[in-house]
Length: 362
Image (tube, rainbow, N blue to C red; front, side, top):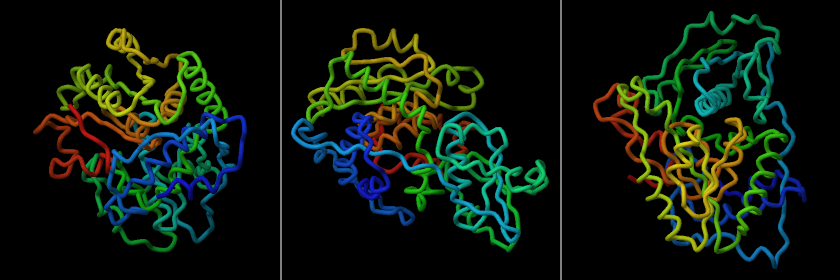
């Protein structure tokens, strides 16, 4: 997918200059990417040495773009069937689940049902396709038998092979944590997961303020890298026994060194629920800003404005990397071999979960 095609949807909006600059930076990286997967819009191969960052922005006109207004991409009629899923987890999980729901609805001509109290339409450009909106009873989904995924973090092709009958309704259960479910609709998914105006404006304002406070300029020599730190819940006894892993400080410093060696100037913006650990760990680390006081949606919007990403583990950091679109480094030790959690990966492979082109690191 080429960024220039996506940007054709946008109109000029002078007040969001930094937002536009960030997108222009990423365009140069996207032009070097090719992903070799049959569902994808293009083939992927990362050529990092060809990425040079932004051009001299002081000598050219900067085009700023506005997200198009929300529109209903689905229509319901008496001949339509519905598709439901069991929404579970926090923001990162909910986004992956919705992406699966969207792809299933598109591929089978179904109407995607979201919960009446879902926060997703309040955060993103997601149409409020609830049961009440189409006049169906609130327990319509609960009465349906469901098809369950075989792996929580691998692509289950059997789910898309379920035959479609006219007026038939479907229900699925799982976390659907694989980009392969919706890669065919990636361009549309990027449009759907655009933040609402309030969140977007706050993220841009914070981003501009951070740059100003640090006296940092986005140019061919300077890039911004988002850092997502997942700790707290991953350190609980229950999660540890389940086999989930989270990195220590060494991983973050290794990843930071990667970017410092690659670019002349790097500003790191750190997002985490464990801000105290981040303050202690990154104390004295130059050009590092720790985000505080944001909601989960506001933080992911801020972090997504960066040129590149350092992610630890989990789906929240996954979406930051996908939204940022630049170089993404992830902690390669996702699970303990032989643990209950490892059974969520088909053949112990993380390829269906990790987006193509991302870089593993210890």
